[in-house]
Image (cartoon, rainbow, N blue to C red; front, side, top):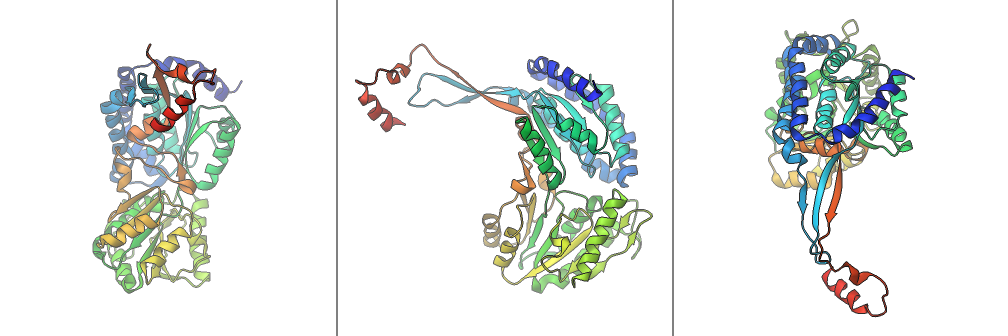
Length: 465
């Protein structure tokens, strides 16, 4: 029997023990996890720099502090989350006591990506622990240094029958997906998400899919363009653009195009360059692999061959796997950069004359994970929100909706299934179990056979239901 099979079997047996755990026991587990992370902070920073050239500051904000916040929020609220929720009575069943119990799903699989390789393992793991589950974690093989430190933290903190880390490549993921997990939480591309969902269907396993897609940014004509450009430059270029909710492309009124390009260049240079034409590698990340580096270069080349224009940037360094910020204009439909999720520091810009054109453009593509709106006209903002669909939306900002654990985070259709963070993550790893307790006095026998003398009951039910 392989190690994967052994771990899975032991967790299947242990899940019934965890189902009985109380809030204090789960809080203690979360505290142990936080302490282990704190003790390994420097190793985590080193690993993230090795894998993605993340700066200490960026890694702190987007990886570690994010998780500390998730853990603290869960510890503060878990007792309330676990409490059975009282549900109101109905006229047809007026004496019953109705409750919803949140019970753990059992043995869960967490498959994480490489772009935020620490955060996107630990965030769902926090929810799984809070909900009382066993879990097997599969970090990405493309971020091996971070995968190694995650394995160490989990091995030092938990028994394998509770939480285990399995390292390996795509074959390892495939082997895991063949097992009848009680829930699978996957973060990654839409194409791999389809594979995960297909595998889960064979065992009727529930899934959470946090995917991505092309998250648009619509800039209204009436806007503080300076603030918009600064925020978009940061949101696009943090982690060298390798963020699932990064602004993927910009839709802007044609009269504001040149002004926006100039401001975007200004703020991107201020944030990520050490000299006018030299990137600051201390704050600007690298592309995760040669394969992804080549893919991004191909997107640029394809766009240029189809008459797009590089309005700024375009320099690359294959030795360090660095792609400088790129702005593409005059981008036509059918160009690969407008069909694929970019996942890099390339910003295509499409102009419009009427706001309805921008809305139609967004609706012509699959529903995105995020949609960003910049503007001052509240009527136009409402028009965009009502006229589009997205996993989440920020108005006059980017990315920040992911940082509030009181809000659900997730996609819709093509960009994902299910929500995470805070109570929504706890709920995601729980089964909402209906429990109805009937009192001695009830009227249910009124609907039992024989029916010949009970036609009046139907008339009564029609009136009250």
